[in-house]
Image 1 (cartoon, rainbow, N blue to C red):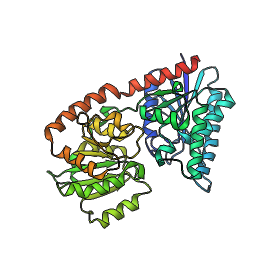
Image 2: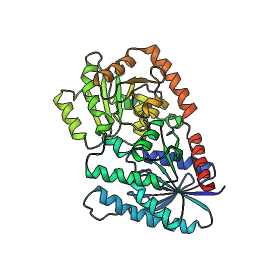
Image 3: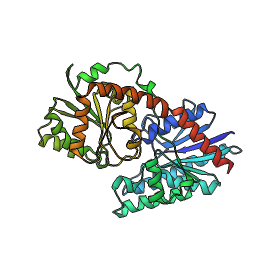
Image 4: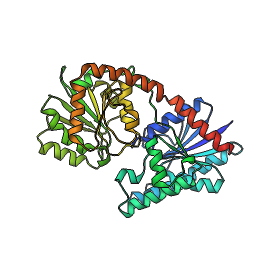
Length: 391
């Protein structure tokens, strides 16, 4: 069946804000290998062309709206209008083919729903996270606005893809999407991305000496990623082992993180790198002795999967999608969410148990190969498309 998919996403490499960009990139390139025509419609980015073909994927970058707007929500709405206009041109050019719209999160909802009704096309949506989950509830008018857009998007979509059973349950309970519309397809990883990387030892030596211990956190510096829990756990770990912590990421909590590190006298023990490019992050996964994922809310847990693929033992909160990726003391160490004592225990468990770590490394490599191949994820997504077109 000849299918053209118009993938609507506000981020696509080299514009990387969160996990949607690598997800769409990997999914799209694998779908092309299965014979699906993929047209990615995404925001512009400095020094990137308006149109290019990336590994068989047609990437269309539109003017994402440069004029001043009162807030992020207003910008999103105007960005969606420009996204809709750009996608309309592609739909006209693809007339005669089976076309599916595939939106990613509430950020592209208005464009996706508008294009669906204007062109009588089926809409598939991947909901990567919910506002309710990120905030632990819906408390403000701003939260309510995003929540209502998510409800609307779920209602308008013919199929909703979720990355974990946890997210499927949340989308059902919180957004009211019936289970028969939901398809669970996990995120993926290609372990080959970690082969052939050079200067890993040089990256490690920037933070620790030859026999030092390197503990890594990768993620946005926001409440739901549990960075406060990590800051509370660091002194507890340092009482038992001499280690260096690297916090790789950026976000609205960066100043708070830096302030806490200074107040606690940890400047020599904790490095906050800010945003790092993908290659540098991959080298850090290879260089680290432990990767900590102390999330309070986590729909999937791509950082844990990346660390596992790199062979880096993971200590993760027993919450959300992380609970499905990590099997305690088999493919990683699970700790209680939002609990600094438990997180410190988990880190020390890895550092003090060499035989356990070797077994974990073996198990997690096998699990990554068995369950999280992008080729299988693309195949499952293509099956969703075919069912949608057939119905």
